[in-house]
Image (tube, rainbow, N blue to C red; front, side):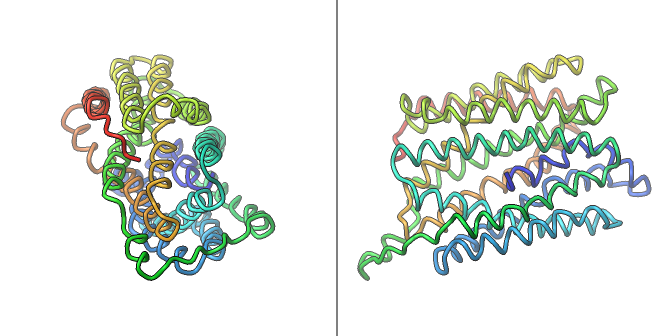
Amino acid sequence: MMSVMSGATISPTLPEMTAAFPGNPSAETLVKLVLTIPGLFIALTAPFSGWVIDKFGRIKLLVFTLFLYAAAGTAGLYLNTLFEIIVSRAILGVAVGGIMTTSVALIGDLFEGVERQKLLGIQAGIMSLAGTLFITAGGALADIGWRYPFAIYGLAIMAIPFVLKYIQEPKVIKVETDDITKAQTIPKQAWVVYIVGFFGMSCFYMMPVQIPFFILSIEEVSNVAIGLSLAITMLVAGTVSFKYQSVKKHFTYNQVYGISFLIMGIGYFAISYATSYLWVFPGMLIAGAGAGLVMPNSNLCIVNLASPESRGRVLGLLTTFFFLGQFASPLLLQPLVNITSIPKAFFVLSLAMMIAAIISLIRNKRLV
């Protein structure tokens, strides 16, 4: 929940936040960075977090980053400039990198086989359902004032007592000296997953970044309505994530990626032809269904590829590529929007994802 909250909570308030800084000619671009700057700092610091948890254990870093998350996340309630807010969001990214890397590593440590596969699907499902809840809450609070959604980040404090009471530090497995270097090596196949994760996140984040502006360009609606459209997309993604284990039983990792990108591509194609708020919904729902398979598929593949001794660092790099994609999304795609338009940019992305789907389905090399 903490990781998806980092962006989803304030997504519906982007237009209101832009209007709150009329004297800043770069406000629209900077406000989009408020949404995505955590992704850059998650990407920069997640490998370090992975190294820390491999060397010193999981629980201490998890508790510290939960405290940091609450402090940095709520700072938007009182900071007065976009620069200050962006700095606080960067610190939030450091916290998310630690939380996300540690939580997935703990799943890899404490569960095996089908149970691990099932739990990673549940984890991705909970993340998406949390997005549904917090986007809706963020939209409702944004209608009161654009600062109020930042208060939601304080909920991170509630997780700390549960971590301390119910999660025990996994036992360290001793490895023979001759095997240490091999155990700590990042598998070559992992780099394929990293690249796919970057591409998938860059494409997916087109929705929370551009959909609020696209909807307002075709119809005048409330922030709650914008939040609802994004929330339902998260709900669909979460529902599909819960079913990941059932899908994975019948397909390889590459086939799951191919199916994901094909469905997302169809959804973005539909969005590109939407002419009203209600017609945006079908495309978003279809795209959300495809996106729901990408994260659990990547996490399971990496957890199974990595040895226990290198799991933190290998997962840290996956987190890096996921959130580099999140951060890079508006930087890579905004020029396309500027040259063409938001709907035409969705159309171009739909073609790119369909091509990626075809490549994944044809290649279909077993990664693990």
